[in-house]
Length: 432
Image 1 (tube, rainbow, N blue to C red):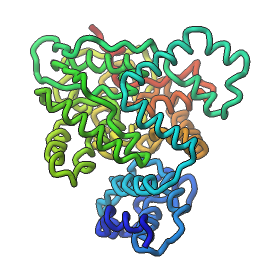
Image 2 (cartoon, rainbow, N blue to C red):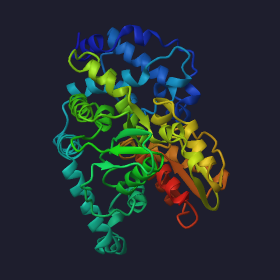
Image 3 (cartoon, helix red, strand yellow):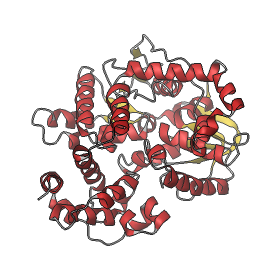
């Protein structure tokens, strides 16, 4: 028995694998199956491969690992599954097992160490990286690089992504950790700021806080919080994810609050899964459950506290469409609330996009690690956008936001179309 098979036996429950009835309800929900029409790139196909590894029916794992890596991890298969198979949990455990047994090249080892151990877990370094991006954009280096054609040394989609990145300011952390409600306090909430959201999308975090204040929330921002660990968990870096989860639980235990607010679908879903991540830890499992019970997306709390009834929302006449964050919809079950908020904005006509609930192809760093499949999915997504005639695409996750901006760039429509986060759109629409 190989060590990989042994770990599959110990860490991936046979009952969970057998829950898959091979009915095929997941197939039309799976973006990679839709693109390839190959069972090996479907949820039930991947589950069959995992079971084959566990049962010792496969002794060469290259095809299995490739199939798992091509998966977006969007978890659209889960709400489609009549048996309630927890596919996402098995996927991340399987990836972690392979990662633990792999012998990476020096290049991969260096990249993983830089990204997962030195950059994302360290907010100070994230701020420094954002400041460097700001310097690149504002110092003239960006214009010079484009003029000299330096970016042509990179793949085309990376050139387009460079144009799709938001214009960022030098990252400066606010000294304030408490932001008081306007008027009577209806709830005290703790804000999960995230790593990308608090650096590259810092203004969106500020928009979220302002909206929460106007809804009657006192907002507390714990300074000791860290990266949620989603990129670690999705990439097989389980130990890093566990460490970050414990640090975040500790940070928010020190704050008395009614809710813990997220404004990034990917972060919210991973935070929501902390109880599963720490299920075998006798010390942390109950603490994780108490933490998870407080997790709420900002759109849900705005609806709960009657934000729509309290405020007038208006924008210039425009068609808008909404691209669901996969994890916000499929894991947290939030999809009605963002639409209700968008529909409350006068002047903005919401046109539902075909397959708005299907992944845009961002999926964390998927658009970097699997660029061909990612761009194929994105190009099809943009065809659905085009049918709405929307001038504004709204979404609720930083990765989705960059991906949709990339789609706009690829379609050559940056002059007539934009992509914005829901919080920024609502603050723009707020009539004081």
